[in-house]
Image (cartoon, rainbow, N blue to C red):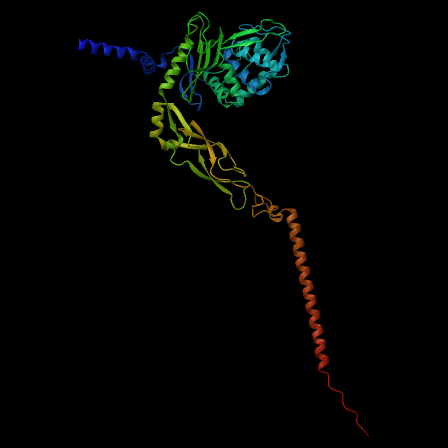
Length: 466
């Protein structure tokens, strides 16, 4: 009886623990190379380091993931999300929000209609609204922004991503764009809010008495009624894409314990692969990344994080300052890569991402960043912080603060015209003073000589008396 009780206790314990096994076992045994999707990227959303890739820099068609660029660019150009816009033209086949000509909607509503239900009509309206009525001008701005972000394999033709042979990108470029939209843009917060929203309701309009109910097409976030669930608990967005030529596409992001991962999957041809395959693969890649990714602090990697710099336009008494690399910065990567960095510290170099440091500087001020370079590749960045304050030249406490000194030309080119004039005037005054002193001295000597001669004149002889 005691043996049976003990056996039942053991079995109960095992059964209780079973639910916790699959996730770690799946992450440990998952091999991302088995994914058949043609173009894949798994990126650390904070550092930009690639954790896994497959043809990530090869040409691919982005389909509606293009709308990530449309959204962030429009957000950066428009300050009033509640500003209203009347639809002048409706265009765009494929997925639609359902807006009609003459309908008045808020800019915010159009953004949700574009990013949640992938409305091609909403994308076209946003491009017009954000660029004075012309989509072509907006597309020019899209390409300019892509160039600024280093999206070297990208060229946009449309704001909605409908297929065009000249409208293309890469998995890496789209992940780079998403990293910017989520973490670096001044409008990252509102972008995150939009792409993580499961459902959104648009109030009735002048053309639609019922308004709109918008449901997110990203199944990592939202499960429609009576549909199979592919929700992933750490997912925070971002965008799906589907065309015959591009196939099934997905840019997704997930955040866990302060770590951000971005996953891109492009090129699963419709009819050849289950339409929900991208969501399964994205969740598996996220689990793989979170389980394998490690952190390495910059201070642990670098032997010296403090250095001195000369400060331009600094006061005479303090023209240098000490700085340190942010000790809270860290590099992320898969475990074997982090171990490789630790074992090869001699191959680590620092590249400064700033040129001249100019006063005034306050203590604790971030004056720029440095890149951590390993074997020629950037593996991380860190802020450079000032350890001390440096006053600007010409301040009241600067002993060098005088008109004459401050007029001396910079860069060793000699005195300024005013300085020369002042110097010549000074010489003239000195010469005049010397001349006056000299003339005065001569006059005094002459006067003294005359008095001496008079005193030595012979006495007059007394008159004789006869």
